Amino acid sequence: MEWVIIIVIVAFFAWRMMPSKGVKSISTDELKPMLKDKSKQFIDVRTPAEYKGRHINEFKNIPLNLLKSKLDKLDKTKEVVVICQSGMRSSQATGILKKSGFTNVTNVRGGMSAWRG
Picture 1: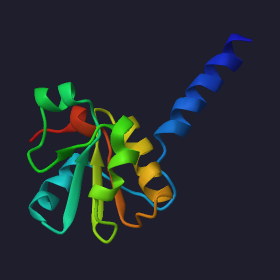
Picture 2 (picture 1 turned 60 degrees about the vertical axis):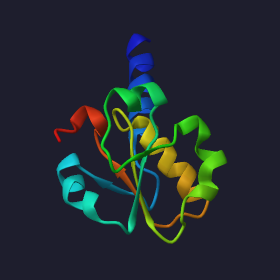
Picture 3 (picture 1 turned 120 degrees about the vertical axis):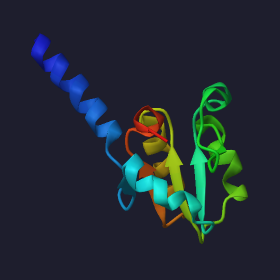
């Protein structure tokens, strides 16, 4: 019985970490050359305290819990690149963006935990 519970928990977290359909996933190394591209929108969905502690300058802080109410501040015609601390919240954010009509959405795998900039 213990194994079933463990398998269910692991499967749940693996499912939550999977990118939404139609969402690109990039590494932090792939992110670095993209940061100079003004045609992209960079969104950090961590809390303001996390963002203040350490962030990438090109990223605008829109916490995940406020994302739905701030969608009108984003341009649906531009690519949106999303980051968080580990990749879990940004994965949720990409799902929200896709459901809201954003077609070009990218998730940064590993988030700020993987960033070596």
